[in-house]
Length: 103
Image 1 (cartoon, rainbow, N blue to C red):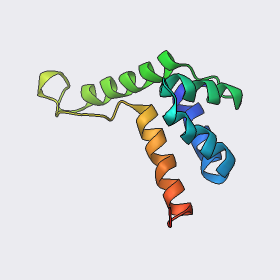
Image 2 (tube, rainbow, N blue to C red; image 1 turned 30 degrees about the vertical axis):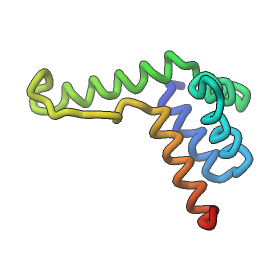
Image 3 (spheres, helix red, strand yellow; image 1 turned 180 degrees about the horizontal axis):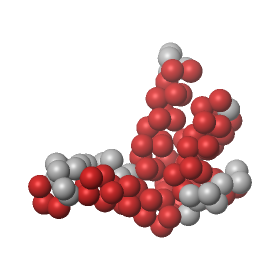
């Protein structure tokens, strides 16, 4: 299974399980949040490693750039769309706020 599929599966699980969501969100406070996040993923049974996560985002971003206006220098500026870690964490934070609106 590729990294994006693993992240999607884990995200769905974390949306429905507050304990998993909190474990993953707690990694934000670690000295090295990305490594802590990947370590938690592996402990939860999802073989996700730092470089695979980074490369998946970069590959996705590169494919998106190639597909717009013929790619190359004329493609629109795309920022932050290649950071799957940040997108994943933002979705968990949004879900946490939905579940606990008073916090």
